[in-house]
Length: 175
Image (cartoon, rainbow, N blue to C red; front, side, top):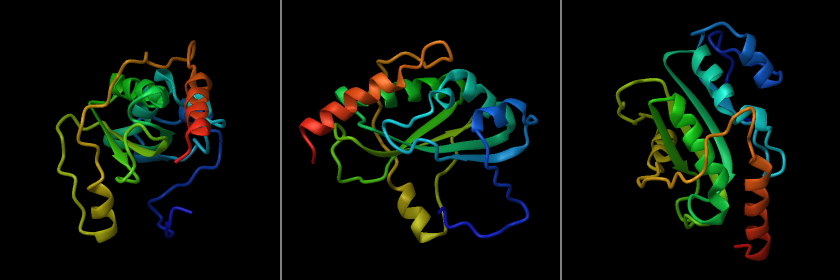
């Protein structure tokens, strides 16, 4: 579904991600693409915590990235999960960028968002020669994301609570 073509340099692993990353060797991967958040009600909280993010960082090479999507608003009552997840990734990665899939959606609207977390210490130029990728890169969110929620941990990751608020807001005012 990612439009990938076979490449001997690429390894696709079909397994519970947390179980795999906990035992994977250090500094093995250039990128981790995570598409585990299928809806507001099926977010595996064990992949959202600072402990999981530290393990993701550990298995990445020094300039590696984690790329994943999540459903959330950027601002307002439906933004709790995004705020907590951004803070969690910012605790571990020096660079964390947010991308809006649909730039025409207002920031308080529940929407599909992409987060890219990079281990690189200095910001890199975000460009691509590929026209489709270049268009996607223009969707970087230029403003500061409010970070009023706590970091998610294995001991406390109220992902379902945050997403139930977002779902309630959406159901009372679908757009």
